[in-house]
Length: 482
Figure 1 (spheres, rainbow, N blue to C red):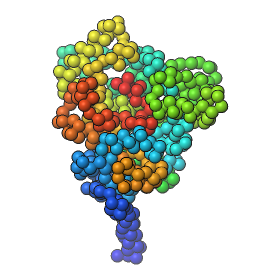
Figure 2: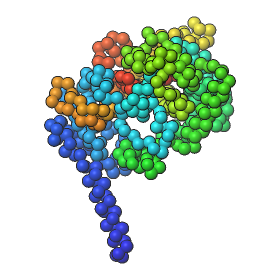
Figure 3: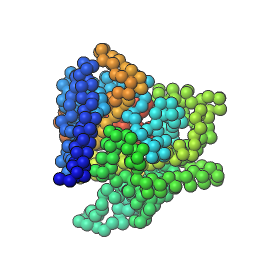
Figure 4: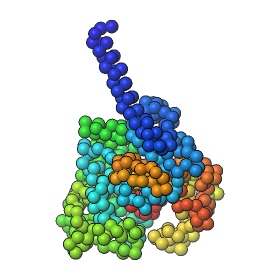
């Protein structure tokens, strides 16, 4: 073996050893603090191998951890590939941390996003006072009144979806051959594009729509993209070397579209019923809301917003910040509602009896509204609500909730103190599949969400969009999309 080759082999061995040592540096973290520790069953490399071979879904690792806890064990420590983290299982403790003691857990896991200036400005990754500032601006958006005024967009896009389906060739008697995922994606690009920034994207009408092509590209989820996310979490310094989560071409396309739309809207003084308009009004200090529609923590945000008596937010809402929030609304909507609607189509095919019940309910509403539906009609579809809720139990849009302690926190009723920057997390998927809360959890059953069934369960056993001030801000309008 040549000297050069020996040096290379030796260097690789040292590198592997160093990486392994780095990942194991906190293995005794929870033992030293007297906290029950649960272990990952797989090494980091085996996780990566399983991702590429698709032998094990990434989400199953959290379920494995969760199932190691007994029913009377409220929490346990683990180490997420080098990072000490606390898994929460007890519903009351989850509420305590996400809501009651939110002041200790304002932020999510720290992400280094030096190479992504627009992503860095999105509310979902903002921290501390910067997050509070943007939240105070966003609180008046998507109240019931504002969603009601947007409903024309939903109806128009719904009509186009029906026309799109009718345009497809007839297959077996009474059916048409369509690619369901494509139909759903095109519909969502149109409806979210209209409600986000008031544009007719024509994804359903135009098979070559550039809007659709770029949206599809940006939302495509691959093993490589998931690996990037893991690496950004485990080795955040890689972002300083140019590692990106976003797709440069598609995000650049939407950023350019948004900047042009924002400039034109401000110059023309044209007003529309869309999210971009709300952001412009917030920038100008003109965004109004009915405080009776706000949750308690949103009212607090409103009180914190006013500084000089004009109603203008203390923070200067820049064009970059507006573009970032509009892009977040658009792309996150495609991802969350797209997956839920795809599962809905699949489950309807499996359960024709449920499909018939939904058809009868929707048909009754359509007849009462002369072929159209409005906000009030949709929100009063009881069986539809149960159906959507059960989909999001089995396939929640947010499968893991994370918070980071921004100061030391003593867990109530214990002697355990979480140090600043400790990660706490909730495995939403594991909770939703827990037979203690949902008997026979693999069975699809909308009747789990009757008023009586919901009242009998702790509310914190159902968290599809999170909870507390850092829940998904857009969940109300996303639910209407469904």
